[in-house]
Amino acid sequence: MAMELERASFIVRLWLEPSLKEEGRWRGHIQHVQTGEAVYFHDLREMLRFIEEHSGVPFPRQDSSRAHQGG
View 1 (spheres, rainbow, N blue to C red):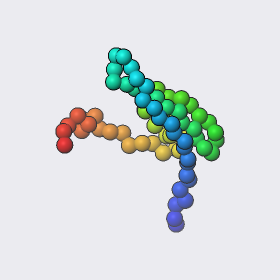
View 2 (tube, one colour):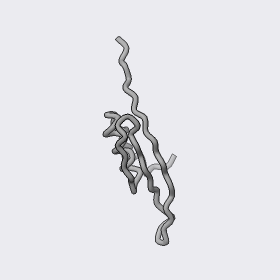
View 3 (cartoon, rainbow, N blue to C red):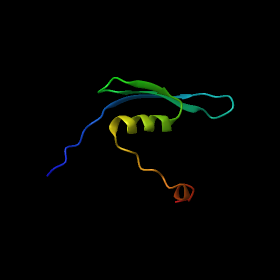
View 4 (cartoon, one colour):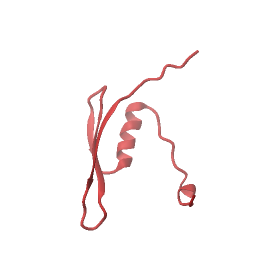
């Protein structure tokens, strides 16, 4: 039996906010098209959490021991 995939659509706006102390930070706004719910975020992880909550599909977590290895 074929599994029917539910689809979720998002509108994402991203911009780099300049900072005197740092190189800059990503800021953004995301809207879930089906519900109209939207939030501003100050961190890309917040955007990913919003997508996970509205899609019901968790993102794979990166293994921190592998993330710091070169190659």
